[in-house]
Length: 289
Image (cartoon, rainbow, N blue to C red; front, side, top):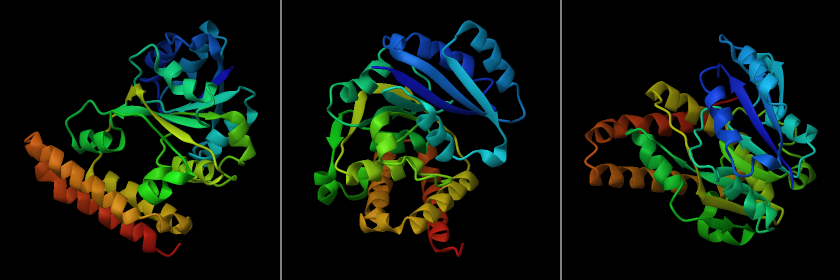
């Protein structure tokens, strides 16, 4: 079994060295064939930092691209297609890996033929609304989903995150990756849908943990959900799977948990935050493109 780790980078100078050390400490590091970085040219010294690290680590492969050429889907797809490893692992530059068995627990289910794709549990280490959305989307119990779960789970059947995920490369190639589509967001749901609908399985690995936190402004939330709304418009077959119910359940969970914690900061910002998401989603979904 061989593994290629694929990580897009942008203005990542302050992330890459620490994260690389976290990868190198993994119990399954010997199975890693390549660490494939794609550097979108930015305003810092990410490329120089990677070049220096490459002198000490011959598993590092990197390339630089112009901002206009970056795509969440196509950039990952190209690297996965060029890989000849058994498993491709997607991560983002800002995940923090604290445990030495993160990679082992992420790829073991694929290695053991339990499923064709896996994703890690993401934990938020700040006290914002994201703390509760992470709790909702990444619970403490692992689970495997398949086509048989659609009636019960609806859209949640296709929940997947390439902030920390593994896919059997043979399956990824067989399915055509992201179909050469330049997706600005939700590329992970796009591939998850294809995996499930083609009769394969996805495992959520609650024991493979990463820390992944943001502190978005209301404008950033609006823009993200506007892009998500556009994604659902362009892939309208997903609207058949109770999209509004999934969003509503998460909103209720966040409110309940913030009240239990007496998290007044979140409670005060709850309505503006949810409004920014809702309005962004609606405008993205109905905007003429």
